[in-house]
Length: 441
View 1 (cartoon, rainbow, N blue to C red):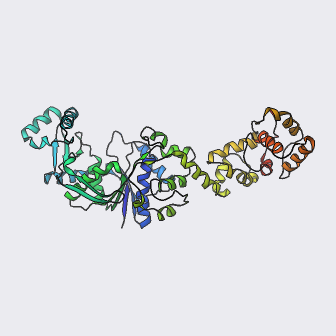
View 2 (tube, rainbow, N blue to C red):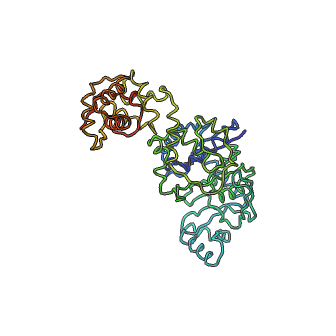
C-alpha cells in the first residue's frame, strides 16, 4: 500500500509552493490507489493557530485534494518523547548548551579557516558536573542527534542518485531548550509509525532528508522513497518569498482562479510534459510522473493561470454556473441567454458582474468625437426595450438607410456606444439582454 502525506504548519495560509508538495504527494497516492494523510505540524504552540488549520482544510477541499485521514502532531508528543529516550539510550542523542551568539562565533571562525560551518560537538566533551553547572546558569540545553560520519545515499525520485557526507552536516537539533519537538524528529517518528512509503518535498530539504535517513535507521526503520522537487521562482527568476502573501491559495481563489486551472498548471510546471487543462484529478494523476521533473528552479507566473481558467469556463454549461448567474440578479428566463452571450467573453467568474451591470444599467458609451453626431442620430432611431433577436439587424438597417454608413463604419461605432467595448459577443444576441435603452451621457 502506497502511503503519502502532506505536513503543513498551521502558521499561515497555504501558498503555491506548499500546493506543489501537497499535489505531488496526493497524486502519487491517488494514482496507485493508496492513502494520503493530512498531517498538521502543530508542535509549536505559540505560532500554530486553529484558524490556519481550518484554512488548510478549506483550501485543500476547494482543490479536491481530500485526505484519507488527518493527524495532528500536537497529539503525538508522547511518541516523540519515547523516540528521544530510545536515541539517548543508544548514545545518539546529546544535550548542548551553546548560545546563538557562541554558535555564530564558531561558524565565523570555521569559515575564516576555510572549513565548513559544522557544529564541533563540543558538548560531547562536557562532564556531568559541567552540564549541571550550565543548566543552573543557562537552563536546559538543546538536544542534538549524533550523526554517523559516513556518506548517506539514496535514489531520489526526481534528483536521481544523491550522496551527502554526514561529516559536512551539523548534528541536527531535534528538541529545543524549551522542550519543543522540532519537525525533523516528529516527521521521522510519524513517517515510521504511519507507514509512509513515499515523501515528495522541496529540494531545500535535501540535507534534512540525509539526516532523517540516519535517524530512521537508528530507530530500526526503513526510509521511504524520497523525491525532491525544484523550488518556484517568479517569472524572471526572482524569489517568491516576498510575494507568497499574494500567492496564497485563498488569494488566488478570491481572484477567480479555477481549481482545475491551478492543479493542471502545478502538476506539469517544471516537467518535460506540456501544460494541458485537465478537468479532474484522475485525469491529472494518470499523466503524472515525478521522474519527468527537473531539478532547476521553476518559473511560476500567476498570469499563466488565467488562460487556463478561461478555457475551463468557456466549456461549461449553464448548470455549472447557475448559482453565480442567479446571484447577480439575472432573471431565470434570461439566464441561458446571458451565459451563452458572456461565457466566451470572460476570464473568471468575477467578470460576469460587469456584463450584467452593462445589461441591467447600461454602459458608459465609448464614442469617438467624429462619430458623436452619427451615434446620437442612431440612438434616436432605436426604440425602448425589450429588444429581440431581430432588433440589431432592423436597427442597423434603418441607420444605414438614413445615414449611408455601412460595414465597419456602421457597426463598430454602434457596438462601442452600446457596450462601451470594442469587442464582445454578437450584437444580435446581446441586444435582447439590454434592460435599458442605450444613450449618450
